[in-house]
Image 1 (cartoon, rainbow, N blue to C red):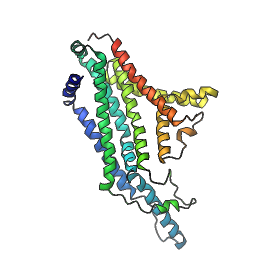
Image 2: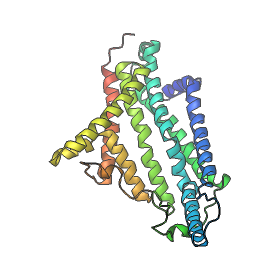
Image 3: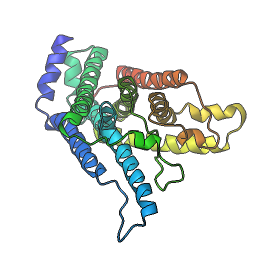
Image 4: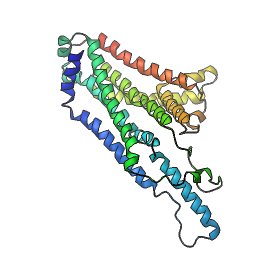
Length: 316
């Protein structure tokens, strides 16, 4: 096993795309954080001309509430979630790309037969590749989360007066889109852990497709098509199913991933409900049950990697 890990390291360290992912995504996360942090200070009501005295106090209160509200995502520990959310799309794409390329390129290069002649144990070979893929994405996610924890001390965003949100008049022109209280460190880490399911699903889907079709590009394409098609089909079934049939679309991977993030955000105090739960035909499942379904999906897809590769006729 150690020799396989070492051999893969010799391959990986010469791949520029791997280092672009490991260093590039954290840089993109920092740039996104800086853009949002700097623009949050501009959140205020613009006035022109003379404002009647009776409205000046109301406008000042609304400006104070807006400043406090838009500064929340850039305060520790909420900033950890902010940076991960800003990099989430890149993390999913990077996870799918790494899985597809590290598993499908051997077929495209015609080197897979030589690999198995040298190391006949296909399961061990695949387990090492999986470990490298998970390790690289894990390091990237950890770097993004660590930057989210550090950046508030470097890029200071004035939190304003948090009490202005609690005292905000419901009839005012500014209404927050979500909770107005700070998140705890445990809540932020809970949401961060739930977000890791997204790149994990990307790894599982793209890797399986790459092994099945023996192509990195086809693996990426098929994984994207499947995710989109499944989401559309689940939404259609959700709107038309009745009785116990309503539970069927709730089992879809894309549906459960969205619900998992929503459950984690509600538990952390970052969301107040709505979203998927307001869709026609939606059936709420206990968060623990939803998390188990996601784990079964990802574990089952990765288990299929080993089935496909063990049964593959390698004649390249």
